[in-house]
Length: 267
Image (cartoon, rainbow, N blue to C red; front, top):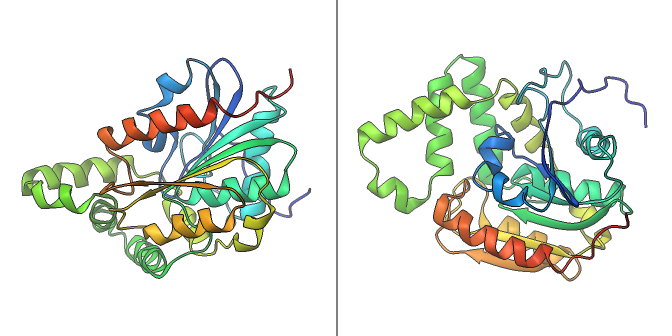
């Protein structure tokens, strides 16, 4: 497929050895930000392939609005060019929609999906947040964008206990870590619609619904699981959009059990 405005070359993290595990990160995130707590563990027996979207990691910012099909194809190319003709995919948040589109466009390459805090189409909360981020960014109010991200991505329990000083420090840290492509990512998130792809997914699929998610309503994960034939839904009670260590540990245990049931790709 040739695109009129091709994406820049993607910066890709590669770590570990074993069957391929393609990582699809979320909007305004990155491989370390979304998967950092589990990279070392999963890389013990998988080759992790973590492409950064335009404007994340060392990937240059795109010059045109992002297209879901093009992004999906580029992620596949990142894995294939590193010797993995087939692979499972871990998709987080918007990365879940990217993963679903990959499974629909490249069915022979995908062996399994793990979708976390995901959605098939933008819900009203995410649409409002995306619009706010774009408006604040145009005004140069990046500290406000970081505050919005913290409010949206922390669990209600964490927000109830955090002190003002801790929150200010977290906002500063969030602003520092925010990739240049954040607005482009959320623009794409606001246009995502993979509902027609769900019934075409023909691989084992595990869907996680963090029930304390304030950015992507848990109903999005429920709808993903309901739309994908045979998908298994696991709720993470009280978990936030960005999983904290205890929830990520639970997630990792269940993901490992799931991946152990997926047949290894041919050598």
